[in-house]
Image 1 (cartoon, rainbow, N blue to C red):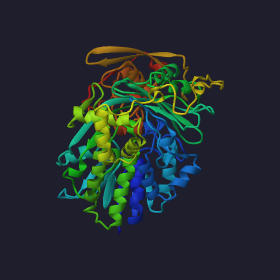
Image 2 (image 1 turned 135 degrees about the vertical axis):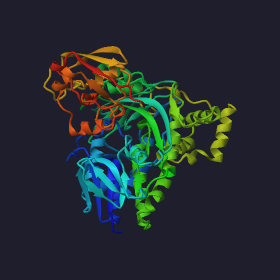
Image 3 (image 1 turned 30 degrees about the vertical axis):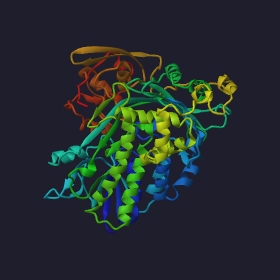
Image 4 (image 1 turned 90 degrees about the vertical axis):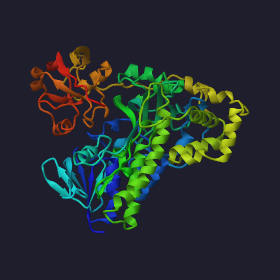
Length: 583
């Protein structure tokens, strides 16, 4: 039908939404504040782009349905098709889960995924990118309909449908409340996850034919690690910590942290790997759900992606939910739904998928000691016992393992609600389940992997695990930094080339949340710089200036984002104040 669709955000969710809308309207405009690179290189607004990524089979299927050339595009870019449930052993709190055949997954680094998606979507004849940032919605005179968006430069972009794909830190909620609309109901479950990832090459034979190995953190053991395939022969090696047990980014600390995972296999293989990049860190508090489907909204506004539901990335739900939202948009357009009715026709079923994903993720994260939840009731003791039963049975019974995979990979919790499984859980409760064989609970030996391979020491030539950043500094220098928090001082010694945010996080400075990991995409590392150092730092970039407009504490002339301040010798002795912004 004739019309103009405006998508806020050129993220994965935004690209997929544009692809979904393209066949059904005259023009799709993606408004993106960051420069979108031409090749497979990191995007400024996606600091998590340096981290491990997994696309669930469900998400892969829906993406390929939206863009029929996508699968071949991934393969041409060096991606690998594999079966994660069969090719990647996982050591759980109960032992090794039974390996079962599933469906195709695609292995990639995020920079490759985004590059291939951009090529496919921007190749559509009626899709364009406008580099700018949305500053507000344009509402009709009676405030019942969204008519477009207001851009940073003051221009107005009219639209028949506005799709918000601007991510977890979306401003649409605040724009609507300022216009008199009630805020959507929120639910959170935070277990404060930290990542540190390095891209590596794994020596032949180290995985004995498998594609990777996984040992996630658990409520009883807050440390974990994963080694998963990427593209072009590169693997993603990641240290994982929960409840603010964040892995470090120095090479020795990184490897020592991986050694803390439940399975020693990961630490041993990690020491055989040859790095092909630096160690990058990322922190994320946890699961956030906004119930847009039940909110009172103006017509012609749709909210998709992380702006609607942002899960703990540990569970690999984000990109799949982005694909599902776009798929619901495509289906509604294909059915001829009009612009006024379209948002609700999409938001309601999409909200059901978010609810299922949030429930599964929050049930796990809320069980970590000290987890913080709001407007969410954690599982009861009986429900938690069911989860333990399924975990243990999935190490013994291939059928239960397959049901678990279906629930997790296809976001179908009903796969675990069968009479047959209920009978097995009853037998488990009564102690009638068979005892696991020794190999199931032995964390030092993957199923079918020779112990000699695991114990082998590498003969590969090791490359440096940390490369100096492209800064004109001596990486051996140290820079003195002082943070002022509520009248007290925290001093730290930084390496030249570090960002002020990285130093604050390592020093545990209160008020520096650094939710986006350093990409200038969240505004949660806001500081006030001392006047005598402000001139040395220079003015903020357009991206930083944009984010500073949305910080929660008052913006002052010396306000900066700590992640955008690279520490060099002229900043030795810098002092900054940390405003205590509400979370």
